[in-house]
Image (cartoon, rainbow, N blue to C red):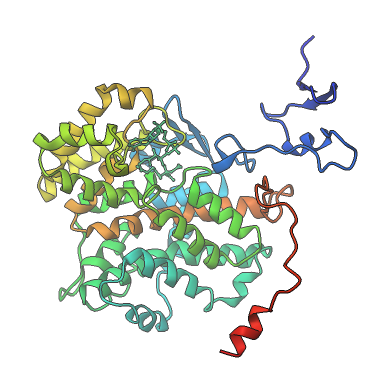
Length: 438
Ligand code: SDX
């Protein structure tokens, strides 16, 4: 009769241990009983970059990397991209169920009425150089928002928590648009509460002298779909950062700032910007074979940006939706010439053994930047466009972490590889005295 346990024999002592298996995992804390001597600390698991470590139990998002599946609360991303809206998905991620019509209406009204930021934020953003990277402006300003809402520290007060969740979801587009307008030397545009979430964002980016900005319907919907696709992705680098920072019970603004910093990196959310720079560097489809050769030779640490994924070992389902969306956007904006290079790059990579062997497929970032560029966003703004919707995923995961009775402050152990105990030389002068007497 099979048992849901794992039997481990420690060959150093001949002892055997039986560990319970739950959800196809063992608790690494159960390894601590494995000792050679009674005063041993006990065994740990060692898993740099957490390639095979579950940090939490979560009901929010499921990814099946081999099958290329992504579901928010059980709903396939392809269906949500076609039949839902970003704000409905944000509600779904946070509350676990799709809202009723009445719930959705009050949710949209609630978000819409929190789109303004304190007037002081304007001078805060104006303090940056004109050429400040918008992600640096975004993450700093989100962190600064924590000083405007000191009561947000009451993270276990559900009412206070949800008010600040709403504020963050509603205000990140406003802050993002302000960072763009500042970089262009344009006046800030106040939110237009008559518009949709995506439409209002486009208005705060694009509006100039016209009395009211009217977003192009195709671009407005395309942006809303992009926000749906980027909303959550289980325990990715930035979400893990959100959970770790949040586990110290810091306020959500500071935790979102920390998550934004993680997203900023070129291996994570910064990849969409890096893809565009890569495609521009390649310059023509005739140069694609040489570029692919250089990547395979590891020349200058070159990577095929927008390819590969820690979890997906198949085509990222989001990339498929984005590829289709690109055609709709290009109908309006005109075809982005870099698309031909991207398609040729994908064609060659998907038939090349180097990429096949490593299961490297296009990920969410491979095509998204082409749409953003065609919509007129500058390349260094692309990661901000990722951070806006991911804020709802970060917050949903943060709420789940706070309500998980098993969670506490994140504090991993280490394997120490440094020096054994050694003493400072007796005849030593304290450097502080030398410093003081300079
Ligand atoms: C996102 O985690 C998430 O869910 C993230 C995300 C989300 O929604 O939150 O999906 C968003 O971050 C998507 C990923 C965007 N990043 C990029 O497109 C950057 C390029 N991709 C790689 O840097 C890489 O694929 C990662 C970072 C995405 C994943 O890295 P892993 O899992 O640590 O894999 P690895 O670096 O160990 O690579 C395994 C092998 C290595 O070759 P060998 O040393 O075995 O010979 O594959 C190679 C790597 O060199 N490899 C690549 C490559 N990605 C991996 N080679 C060329 N080009 C690439 N893009």
